[in-house]
Amino acid sequence: GIARFCLLTGESLPVTVYARDECKMGSNVVRGETEATVTATGANTFFGKTAALLGQSSEASNLQKLIMSIVSVLVAISLLLCAFVFIYLCTLTSVPEALSFVVVLMVASIPMAIEIVTTTTLAVGSKELSKHGAIVTRLAAIEDLAGMSILCSDKTGTLTLNKMEIQEETPIYVEGESRYTLLRYGAMAAKWLEPPKDALDTLTLGAVDMTSLGHVEQIDYVPFDPMVKRTEGTVKENGKVFKTSKGAPHVILKLVQEKGARPDIQAQVEHDVHRFGLRGIRTLAVAKTDDNGEWQFLGMLTFLDPPRPDTKATIDHAMEYGVSVKMITGDHLLIARETARVLGMGDYICSADGLPMLDPVTKQKPEHLARVHGDKCLAADGFAQVYPEHKYLIVECLRELGYKVGMTGDGV
Image 1: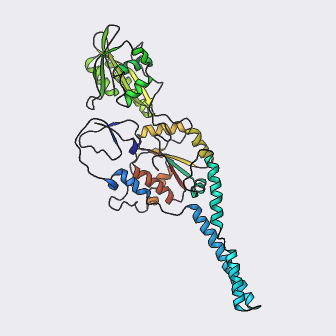
Image 2: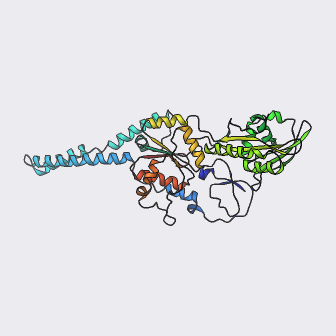
Image 3: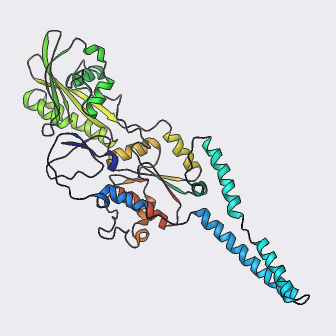
């Protein structure tokens, strides 16, 4: 079957799930059916562990600590001065009168209204922030945000649109073909008159010129099969009947070599797939049969989950204010590196290998977290292929190092 894990890992496209694989809570089955055994429920699932982590943060905010320290110092000074005044007054008047005067002085000198004044000031600031579209759920968070030194952000849906888009770069291997014709043949390998069944059909049918398919008749259609990893359509256009197919490049390459011609393009296709892969760009191969019924590898469509239009400017502004921005995503390492490169976030993106996990029994963080993993978490510009537990522990590690850390996106 095919399942979507974007809620857990940030992976934009559905992935193929085979027998004995584990589908975690929060994932959605896109296609297929099977009998399954429930191995964990509630707080014991990956999703449940993440929710449980939210309830463990009960520490006082930075503002509360600051107010308490100010009040403590003022109270200590007040008590000290009142003691001097009491001793002095005892030499001039009776003890009861001196005591009553000192008590009044003490009550007047202790800053009991400081929290009320601070809360009122923050409420005014919250109203000003609302004019800029910011929602303040906790007043103390305004001061916490002002003191933030590191911002950890998810990628999918936060830095990016969480929507795959066809790219302009389109490798062509047959003379006379173009990105326009590849989109048409790719659409013919789908049911273009029906709603898209998966993400790849959505991409192709969303970019193709649908009016040009008005006179095309689909005779037969073979839907996507996880074992075959491609779709196939038999169509009739201008009196000619031919087949089209789209799928993974290595699958289409094998199809062409088995039942077609041009074995010389293998090296070129593999080179292009690797070249795009280094930039995190995914490829979708398109093929069709010629007049002799032999398969021809026409080219490849490229697609990527692009950054939001305002993301780069936001990150640049954060860095100007001295805030370091780190990407933490469950998506593939190459895709994370390409996104970080485009957004100017640095190129030192680490995988989840070597990152700590919560104790399986106590669900507590490891001891000496910052001492063991602090250097890695601080030096990295981001992390890829991580689970929610990793996100929590990365943030916790940075906090143990003494940094004020923010988190945005699904990682919250």
